[in-house]
Length: 68
Image (tube, rainbow, N blue to C red):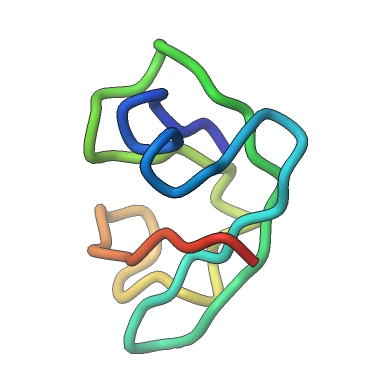
C-alpha cells in the first residue's frame, strides 16, 4: 500500500515493512511503500487487497494504520 512519509515516519514504517489496516469490519496486513503520491492522512491499496476491511466496496473507508 502507498503511505505518505508524514504518516509513515511517526509509526516507524519504511518501504518494505508490513503494516495493518484495521476497520470495524476487519484487518489486513500489507507491504508498505512510502510515497509522496498519496495525500497525508490517506493510504492507497488495490481494491482486491483491502476488500475485507471496506465498509462499502469502492468507497473510502476510515481505517487505522499500524505496524504489524
